[in-house]
Image (cartoon, rainbow, N blue to C red; front, side, top):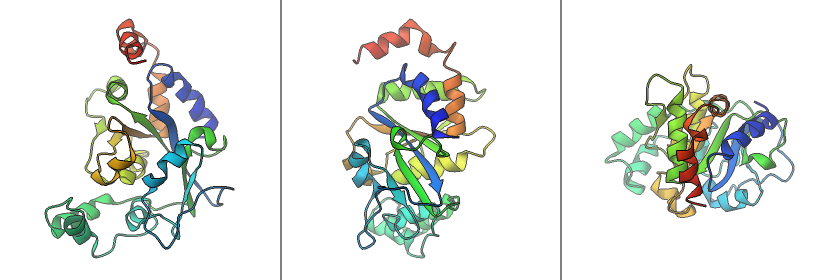
Amino acid sequence: MDNKTVKASLCKLIKHIPFKFPPTGWYFTPLKPPHAVTFDEKRRICMFEYFERVTKGEILCFSARNPGCSGAACYLGFKEPGEKAGTFLSQKEGFKKNAALGNAFYAEIQARPAREDYLIFGQLENIEEKADIEVVNLWADALSLTGLVTMANYDRPANNNVLIPFASGCQSVWTIPYKEKPSELPKCVVGLTDPSVRGFFPADVLSFSLPVNRLIEICDNISGSFLKQASWKTLVSGIK
């Protein structure tokens, strides 16, 4: 979906749901955009160390050569997890009870391979309008999340259309929602529940990420939904 269309659709949602930071998006490209930020190959860098810079207008450029960290290289689809990945997850990070469970975690990821040399992340306002956006991230507090979760289930018979998986930060904002994109009923993903990234965000902020096709559906459903009702408007006005 071209970024011009995505931004126009998002304008309708932003009128009804406030967000802590401007929406961000991801897209592939065969050419590195001018002025895009690449990571130092000699240092392990979490992409969220750069999030403040993204909020100020910079865009990040990931590639097989410059993925930021080894985990992101796997989660973004540039390489397969190494043999010791499960041990790192259990013994170094303490996120799984043992290496076997760590290895099971990595076996479940099944990230879709990167389809171009570069994967770009940045504010939608700072991404060229013709870019083919794959995934959108919204940065929500509890009230905003309430609105988003309700809208994500508004047009579905089942009520489990939002995932809160155990996942790294970059998995939650890219890997999982991107895997959802070709699904018949793609789900949304709540993220930033990774302890290792919490220090880069205010305590009340979580991510709400979704494939771009699902975003367009949700925005098209605003008319007639609770977002237009006085009760929701009163809630939102109470936090301004």
